[in-house]
Length: 245
Ligand code: HEC
Image 1 (cartoon, rainbow, N blue to C red):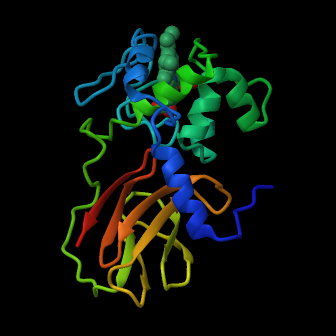
Image 2: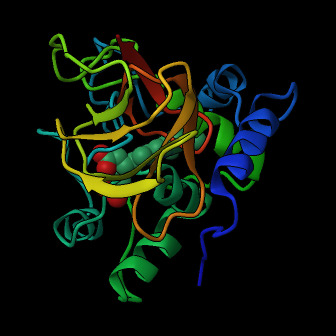
């Protein structure tokens, strides 16, 4: 069972932020992933104009339900997995790419399931990097850092620190700052969590976790008096954020 740290989370998070931004500490490399993608390109296209080849287009695949590209003839196993709730996240892609048939069998609990993708990417770093590359494309093929939900101006008191979920999925958010109690809550798309501090020049940390059980999340160090928008949850060190003052 995963346990979230209970001691001095503010300090731990800030220490964690330094570790994540230290040179060489990034777990994934989207540029390297573009090279790895050459091996997928025999069967998959990606980008705004991507079309069906041997496999479905992979534009916006991170966050998409499995087996759902219109017009592509998926295996029965893939369709069943999508219907059973399989969504492509970094974790599920990481397992799937290592062995599509094994993954679908385990997911469906059906030893006769067969994936149509006759390709396996064994190397873990290759998998991490190619997933980072896939995550740079959203559904319309634009850079993923563009907000999926249009921005609207937000009024915040200068002693408030807020975080808003602008992703298309529900996630667990935390906000903490000097002179304020740490708060953790689940936010549906568009919802906001705010904390009030006594100091207007304080700094805080907002974090997002994929779910209740996720230990690693994306954190961001921010001045109080701002609303941080979490645009897209990708992985513990690669979420896309923007700010509203
Ligand atoms: C030999 C051709 C081939 C290669 C190479 C290949 N794929 Fe696939 N891929 C397919 C096919 C065919 C499917 C459909 C699988 C099914 O229906 O079971 C698929 C499905 C997928 C899916 C599921 C898409 C969806 O809409 O649910 C993902 C994700 C994926 N591939 C990623 C990759 C990545 C990343 C690589 C490179 C590391 C790769 N594939 C290499 C043929 C290939």
